[in-house]
Image (cartoon, rainbow, N blue to C red; front, side):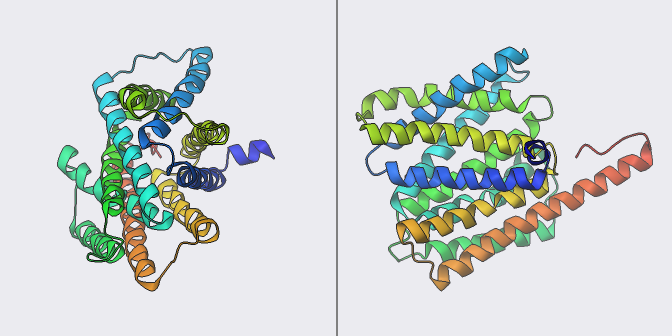
Amino acid sequence: MVRLILTSGLTLMVLSAFFFALTDVLIKFVSPAIAATEIAFFRFLIGAVILLSLMVPRGITLRGKNPFMLIVRAVSGTLCFLFLVKSISLIPLSTALVLFYTFPLFAAFFSFLLFRESLGGLEIILILVGFVGIYIVIDPGSHVFNQGGIYGLLAGCFAGFTVVLIRKLRETHDPLIIYFYFCLVGGIVCFPFFLKEFTRPSFEQLSLLILLGLVFLIAQLLMNQGFKFCKASEGSVILMSEIVFAGVAGVIIFKDDLHARFLIGALLIVGSGFGLNLRNRRLRLMEVSTNKEKDPRELPSE
C-alpha cells in the first residue's frame, strides 16, 4: 500500500497540497504572536538539519553546479515565504492563498523576460484574465485591499520568479540540493532579524513552530517525489487543490466569509493558472514530437 502511494503522482501531489494547506493553518495560528522572520527561521533551521541528515548518507555533494542561481533562488524563495506569512497573518486565509496562486501568471512573464520563452496571444489573454481576477479579489477601496493583499501579491510574484529558476536548476541539480540551499540561505538571511525580533515562544507556540517545520518538509518531499511520477504541468495543477483545502479550513476554523465577489475573482485566477499550465504542457508535447521526428531514439523528458 505504501509503495503504491509513493509511486502515484496524483496521490503524492494531493497529499503534498494537503500538507501545504496544513502549514498555512499553522501559520495562521502562530502569526499573531510570532514574527514572520522567527517563523521562517524555525522552518529553515528544521528543514536544513533534516535535509542534511538525508543527503550525507546518500553521498550528495553540498556544492551545487550553479551556486549563484541556487542562492538567487533561495533568496527569492525566502522573500516569497516571508510575504506569504505576512499576508496570511493580515487577511483571510483563503484570500491570501488565492493571491499567492497568482504565481503561474508571474512565472509566464519571468520565463519570457529572462529566458525568452515564447509568450503567445493565448498566454497574454490568460495573464490578463488572471489580473482581472486579482482586481476583483483585492477589491480596491474596500477593507480587503490592505497590506495583506499587497503581501499576497508580492508572494505570488516572487513565487513565480522562484518557479522559473527551479525549472532551470532541476535540469542539473538534485531536488534535495535545491531545497537545502533554500533552507540554508533562508536561515542565514532571517537570522539577524530573528535575533532582533525574537519573542520567547510559549511551549504551545514552540511545539507549533517545530510541527510547522516538519510539515513543510513533508509537503516538500511529497511534492518532489510526486514530480517523478507526473508531468510538471499536471503536478502544478493538482497542487492548486491547496486553495481548496485551505479555503475549507478557513471557513471552518477561522470563519472566513467566501462571498460571491471573492469566488468569481478566485475562479478567474485559478482558471488562468490552470490554462497556462495546460498550455505549457501542450507546447512541451509539441516540442517532444518535433524532436522525435528529428531523432526517433530520443525519449520525452517528462
